[in-house]
Length: 139
Image 1 (cartoon, rainbow, N blue to C red):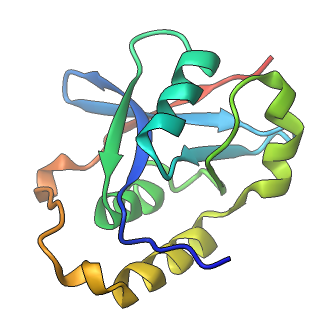
Image 2 (tube, rainbow, N blue to C red; image 1 turned 90 degrees about the vertical axis):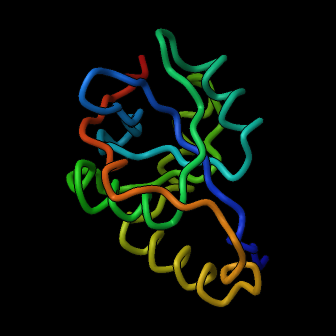
Image 3 (cartoon, one colour; image 1 turned 180 degrees about the horizontal axis):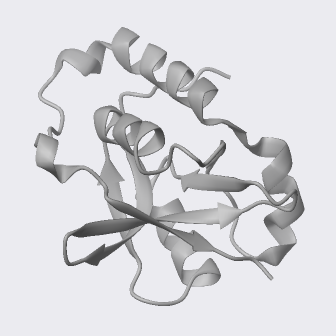
């Protein structure tokens, strides 16, 4: 199935003085992963059913996501696209996750070839880079 990646993606974040934290999750294998969502509603459902605290859903761009994955989240080896919330979905996250580099190569390839990629999409300043990450421990 081909997916159009001209749409923004969504992250779960927490704003703090000096920046924001990006939610990470721990897979059943023990590896860390960055949950990334195709739609705002999916991110909100994950947030409501799988996290507690002052987390928020935030739209992100290809450039910002690249900065996150190769900057503050460089140690996070996996990305889970549209994970289901709750502990019942935990075992499947390992199966549907992919390496962060492979995820970005695939995503950026689709963004560059999208006819909407040359449009007036959302742009962020360079100073909007993520400075911290947080881990959601599944129990």
